[in-house]
Length: 215
Image (cartoon, rainbow, N blue to C red):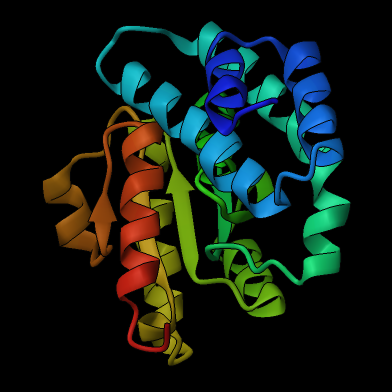
């Protein structure tokens, strides 16, 4: 009998084919799709995030683990849809206007998916309107902005200012991150959270959504 712990273990090792086969076998043996998701895939990816945060593993290992997670997700997603399984929340993720760096943004997106979020990726060089319109369109909970250049950091403040102008600021949890960003800057521009890495971003986003008054 396949266990969720086995799925988690092989996901952490980045064994996509094995994870896929184990998920198929687990379903055939009657394991609940939600158990596979939460105790296997999400558990494994959160442990990967913790190891990444502690510098026990690095970006290549995270990417391989994320590929394994996606291999398992493709198998159980139809089952989850049938069951009406709701994501933890919805997060709009992107790199701000003028910035073409995507590795950090992609890592955050992967870790959020691993934490059970539906992720809406607006890509790189995304202006304030791209973040806001996509958040409105998808009824998102979180807006995550990434910047790797000091010259593009101000685009984060512009997005927050536009949210305020449109009376939408309190509707979203706004998170910022990236190499030049820090807690002081996040506080100065009025963001809700600054997180130093992708794993922390996923943890903070999940906790923040769970604490939202309308949840």
